[in-house]
Length: 193
Ligand code: SF4
Image (cartoon, rainbow, N blue to C red; front, side):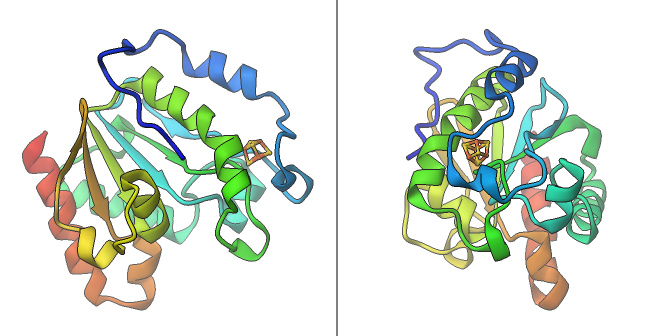
């Protein structure tokens, strides 16, 4: 399981994102390396106050090697802009960095192998806010069995970090009722900045 770093034993920015990326290399530490096209490390402002964490790369992300490309990515930018948050000011990553086949949930051993790198990214960026996008990321980061519907709209404090679970923009593509919740929750985030 991911241990979110605690500010009492780690200072921000001691290791750069470039160094963490170099350490990851052409990673073959878990079986997802056999089915991926590209590692999706993350993108954005290395000193962001907001870190957004999704589940895993999808098809387009795997092909391009970048997180949140395609419609969900465009929608995410739109929600951020509507809330008055510059998409260039955030950093985006996923729980695992390679696409699981057929977009299945990542397996426990894939998560335990990959997330030490995410933990190092969190330490490097040292955001004030972590947005967990969707069910999987929210349950995983908050170590809870509660689903995103129960978690959203709340702010959880984990050491230095404030964690806000928000519906994944992809969920609102097929269920427009979720779009209002996403807007509310990004407005809440903006009010806390
Ligand atoms: S998912 Fe993570 S641990 Fe597995 S191969 Fe990809 S980068 Fe390496």
